[in-house]
Image: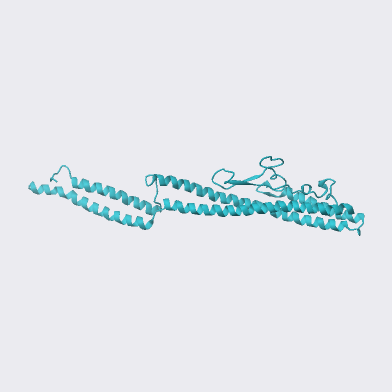
Length: 293
């Protein structure tokens, strides 16, 4: 290489190496300070795209878990109301049993029937009043069919990342639980279970109340099954979100040990390049020696 003064090629070479090494050092600093290997599409375009999709799915799954937990709370609210209705039906059957025997007068049975009708009215009040976040649960609003809604509709519980009926949601259906729907009390018309004002009516009411209890227990059992299903769904979603988070971490997060090694290497190379650039900038002064300077 000739000794020239118009162009300092060694300094240019050192500056180019410094620029390259300093850029890599800056990348290491960014990764170590952020904790991320991928900070922009420039770092890993494909990795960034995959990471962002994973992050979206993770957040959606976590929201799905919250949706499923809300549904469990709804079911627990309905089940609590059914437990109170169960108490009322038990008392109604106790009254019917009392009125069914021949040791009481008509007047006494009318007194029993008064409490019997009060219990039926309370069942209806509970059914109409029970709600979760403004949604009525036992008045028949959720007793419809997905094919033929009829009186009401079913409640869709959405927890998946898509909109597939096989994977991402299912329905909660709760039959109407008023006294008339259960077939007890004056609201049931003139059928068995409507009154216990006579001995024969009281005897018929015993079977009608058994039928009402069976109807109510069927609904509660169905709700219990859905609650268990939702609990399993929550467990599965939590595991999926956790595994997806681990996969996202492997793509996105920086390996601190490896990156610290790279940082130290680039730091040394940067210091060396700065030193050599300083030396290269002084070399053209040698030409002054030849010029008698």
